[in-house]
Amino acid sequence: LALLGAEIEKPIERNKEDGWITVSVNGIEYRGVLEIKSTGKAHFDEQGHRQVSEWIERGVSLRSIKYHGIFIGNNQCSLPPSERTNPFSDSWKRAAELKGISAFTTSSLYLIYEKSIEGKIDLNAFWMQVFTSAGVISEFSGLDLSL
Image 1: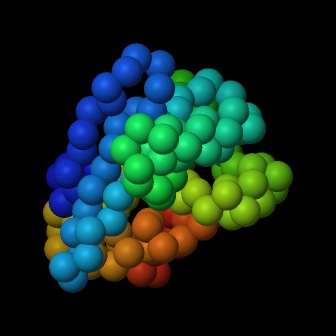
Image 2: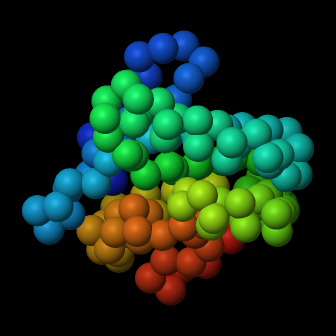
């Protein structure tokens, strides 16, 4: 995330949010709270978006800031990314949309990173999509991120 232009603040407490993220796009500062999950299973359970909601509430109560929730997940860790299934069930996607949480996979994030090194994507546009969308981000600038 830092290599994509984000400022990351490491978590303060153990077993809470996985970090706080700040990105500046066109002079506007966006703030988010991170939940990063890894599982050997094919799909993420409901715990992931519930935790992001809890971290958003922590941001309000501890810092008086309503952060945007960002979930980054890695499923079927023992398999190569090309063999993994879509980890987000329909109910997971709906919950993330309703809660205003952005979600994507580590594989998607790596693809964005690769394209940024090649100079083939607009990182400001990527961050705008992350911070203004709700739900699973499966496409960006013509790239299929659902892999």
